[in-house]
Length: 249
Figure 1 (spheres, rainbow, N blue to C red):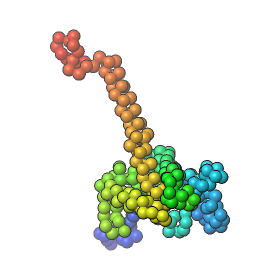
Figure 2 (figure 1 turned 180 degrees about the horizontal axis):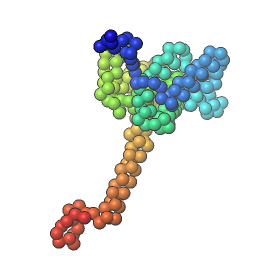
Figure 3 (figure 1 turned 90 degrees about the horizontal axis):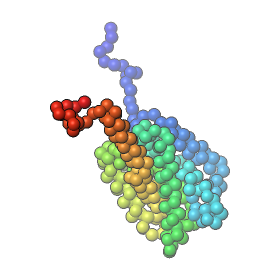
Figure 4 (figure 1 turned 135 degrees about the horizontal axis):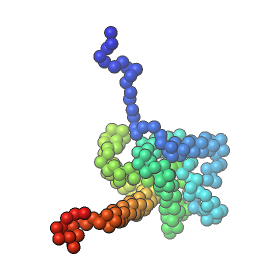
């Protein structure tokens, strides 16, 4: 006798956006490998973390890229990679892996350059940024979160896994927190400055960057082809001016 109800072995449960996409899988793998390497050789963090004094004093020009693959502890890398998976998978599916990687690095490097530029601000705030070490993928992840909010503004994000907030408001809240924290005085603004830089870099790139440019080029190209086909087949809206019967050819 066959039961009308499915057995427990046939039930499937899902959490999050689904399996890791290729680019995110590669990014997570590199971050995990770098984290394990820093546990074995901790001094790597000093050479490959972001420190403006080393960029200009020792010409460690690779730091604005390498810093985003280093993390300070297990929870640091865990939450960054979890956020990357939750908010980045759908973006990569929509954009494609190549563009997602490009956007990810632009946000990460943009966050680093924000920190570097602000390190030249006169006073104790600039001095602290200039000599402090910054590590982590948070700047790039904040950019991913911003893109998610721009494309899916009404999607609920559960604050503290309890309170549902539309993505657009969630990003506005964390942006405001980062801005206020970066202005909170000595000791409070280093990481938050990088977070804010990732948000700003992502916003500027999406608003004036390649996505809108390619969409405009595609639209103009299709419009040109349609008009060309009309002329080729002698098609005119409302009929030709010299057609006495005003027919559409």
